[in-house]
Length: 248
Image (cartoon, rainbow, N blue to C red; front, side, top):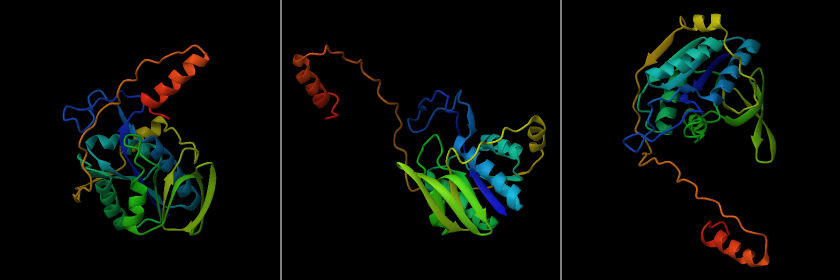
């Protein structure tokens, strides 16, 4: 099976994020960047499907030079090849999806995997955009995947329960936590990954559909207020919830 796993490099979830001087991007100074955690599930699933059906796993990423570190980790896990569309800007989700779609059309895989969302912008837009651009079915937030021949059966999270979806290859799957347990690369695999190829592609520079006007940190939370339990304080509590907290 020819499998493409789309990955991205994101700030470590434990990193302290600051807004950059331009007020429109994060300040990368001192921030550790890692393979997007949800993409780890996608890489692991790609490797498992390869083990079951044969074939190869290609990692595909849109990003700058630093994104090679995320690709190297996926290669150390067992992927066969990495492709980096070298685009330092990555203007918006549409640009990333269009860049990915262009390479995927060329590779023509049976299965495309990616994490349910990146942990930086949390938009969960890339999977649906790829489905539209490539005109192939998408099953998102998948926690269980079974592929037999060209038949695909996926279990996905929905609010308050699970949903089972059936489709056919080729298709796109976005991975949710619980789909599998990603493997940790061993030192020999990490060393071998250094010799695996990472092909660089020039970006096709599609026009962005959105523009980030401003980034800012949330306002600091105010101090809490405590009330003695009494009938006299009930009215004041209701007033504050309505006029200040604006929750009722």
